[in-house]
Amino acid sequence: MRIVIVEDEASIREGMEGILKKLNSAYRVVGKAEDGRSGLVCVLEKKPDVVIMDIRMPDMDGLAMLTRLRENGFTGRAIILSAYSDFSYAQKALELDVSSYLLKPVRVPELKRAFEGVEEELQEKNRQGMFLNLENIVRSVMTGILERSEETDILLESRYGIVKDGRVAVLGVWLGGFYETQKEIITRILHELCIHAEDCRSVVAVFPEWRQCVLVVYGMAEETDWEDYFDQRAVPILLSNTGGQAISFWTEGRGFYALEDCGKRGRALLPWNLSLGNGHLLSERRQKETISYPLKYPPGLSVKVRQTVIKRNRKEFTACFNDFLSYCGKTVHHPRDIREACLTFLWTVLNTAQEYIAFHENELVVQEILERLMGAVSWEEIQGCMTDSFSVVRSKEGKEQGKSPLIQRAYRMMEEYYSQGITMEEVARKLSVTPEYLSRQYKKETGLSFTEEIRRIRIEKVKTLLVGTNLKLVRIAAMTGFSDSKYMSRVFREEVGILPAEYRKMNG
Image (cartoon, rainbow, N blue to C red; front, side, top):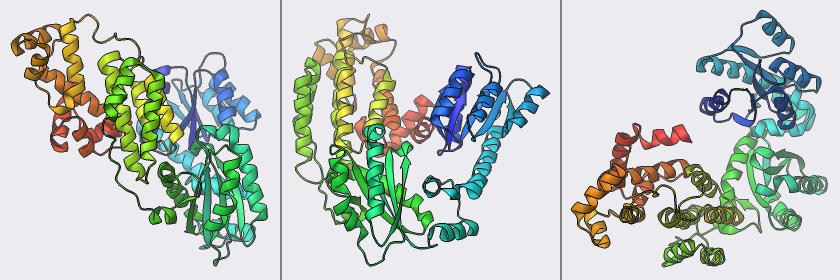
């Protein structure tokens, strides 16, 4: 469900987005606005299923905004949040077909019931009116909005010849960051494929939320290898018209309602582009036939990466990353192994930046880069993550400012070797001072003991990996210097108050 929030109080606006994400993972906030005038523009542009809005706002109040929206053809549902129980407001809201009128402060159970009501309204709307357009039906099925019923089965077969348990397939074309500029040419190509494909029927649908264009094929002759057919006819055209950017996948199922599962399986195939490239359709058949080999991180690469970051030499950094790409491409590896190797590369950049240079932005920027990397399905995306990681470093300053050179050097050593179990004695020896003096001076300047600082550093690294990656706890524990995941979880709970899994769920 696509949602726009129009609320002049920033705290309520941002808090509402967080609550909606926890209520249902399918709820997507596609736009936010702080007043009625900007809300009007946002809703008309984003075309959400639901708009949540306050009544009293600057420039244009919520009811005036909704009136303008209805005049402009907006048929989505509306939920009002208001601190006022004025009858005239409620009466006007009814005239504008508002689904719910909730008084602030809104309680979560009330909001949940309001959205459950909206979902029922949307489902009923889909059952009654969506059959006029097959593309809309495809969108509703693949996004899980349209539920199966005997009535819909009858309408699908009588109107479109879609047999209840007939063979269906999805040819998905992922465009990533090029979606907006290339979706029109891709939809035209897919429509041409519809026209020229014999012994089957098909329809084209677009999914901006997934940055994909989709060709749904049904009514297929059972004896034909349709995957091979579209692999030979579609992929070369798609690549030549997108500058080699399109990534295409193929999945099959039984029954039109299997399209939702086909779409999910297709999106799960996309990371295999890192291993197999985009010269052919990504498919489960091709995946099963592929033999992948373990990927061992290149020896000595971390040293080279650290040196390029410390020198802030972009040319050498790019060359270093290209060497890494070449190494990964020598044989076929599982995309999971590729992403983990890329994570190690990125982690080296970030750790080196923290140790010697400092970040240009706060930790949210780092988390955003990590999230992009773990969700990357193309080498262009990964290269963008690496480039951005190199760009967020600047001259040394910030958290070490005001501390003595000795303590600055000690802290950088702790940041670098925290995962290797470095001790106070080892740091003191490297700095040519006694452990007693270093311990006393560190406590004096930072307020923390050596053990407390190491523990804090480890927990902060764990937090970043929990939020920014999908790595398992065992892997995170190993990367952050804990003996095992159980011990890490115990320490994490002592420091943060909740278990790592709970922290990941709350911040995911």
